[in-house]
Length: 153
Image 1 (cartoon, rainbow, N blue to C red):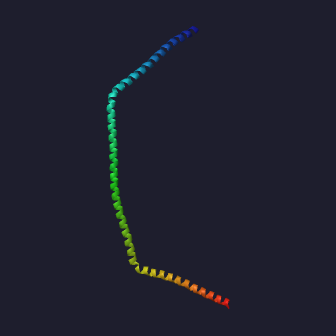
Image 2 (cartoon, rainbow, N blue to C red):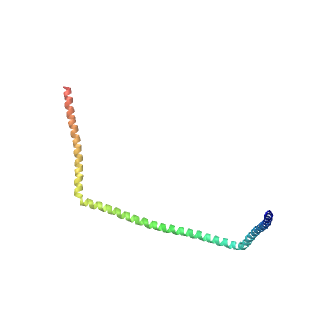
Image 3 (cartoon, rainbow, N blue to C red):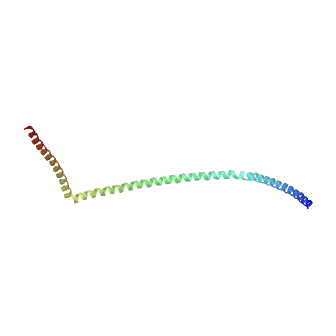
């Protein structure tokens, strides 16, 4: 049994060494293949890269030009819209102001008698207040005069 185990381990050791060498060689071969593919790809695509970069540059330039034209067109449209909006808004404001003035004039015509009566009443109330103050002063002077005369006696 011991001898069988030793022989089995010896065989497995030889197989492991062979497998290990094969795996190392395979990895090295794969690295070489990858390097060769990169080199071949660069050679192949080196000629295409000039055309690709030229195409990309042209596409980028065209996109920039399109963007600039779009912005200019939007600004132009917005300026036209702003001009039309300002004219319309001014016209509407003028119409609204004229309507307010017209309504005021019509209101004054309709209530002309009332407004003059109101103005006279306000004037009369003010005159009445003024006369009341004058009368209070006169009465106060009489009272003080009587008191002053009593003190003088």
